[in-house]
Image (cartoon, rainbow, N blue to C red; front, top):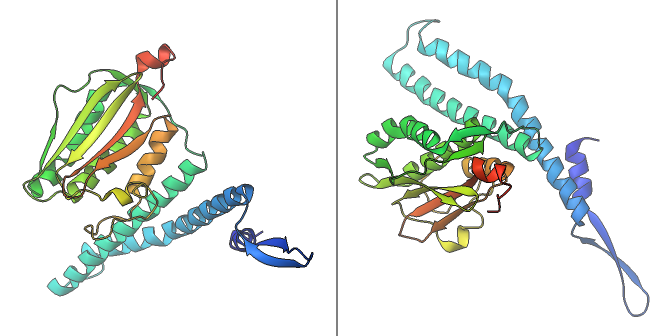
Length: 274
């Protein structure tokens, strides 16, 4: 069945009620737990399908814009180049959104295998810092670590956890004003390493803490930025490692996003309770 049609069918659930006289009435009621799970699966399938179908035309569009900007098809005026650069920027943003949707759909569907291997958490932090130093300097933000960093080894998919760090740091830089600071902390916590990315931005009101990891959610009034997928992807990756992720923030007092990953020593000892 077409997933769009099946979604409509799942969403429409008839509930039969009888009054004291035995007269029955039919009303639309909420789907059952099973149907809700199926609806979530179908929504994930639809998102994945749409994102996949967008990749090919987006690739063609990006290549065409690059050829035009390289003046391979003829010279450009200054105004034409300006317009094409703006189009290229939007194209890259859309490509990032599509890639994020595909990653999120694969992770939710359990199609992404985590290749967990021992690695120093300090090495992961330093790699993440180096990736974002240029952007931080350009925005006048101090990007640093709270020393000493934990020197323990964690059992993680290094590429995926690097993406988690990248998403959290990019998010912090985006919401921190010039002259502010973004700090990364790591510390042992039972059988885990707790990693924190703290910023000196405007903070997040308490009422939005539960929704901040929802796909596409944006805190009202926050600066416009990405597609609203980074935190959701980070959450699914951390959960795929058996860890937890959360935020501590108060409006006007900055935010600290944290997550936990398993320590190698604790995994070997079977002591990995968060």
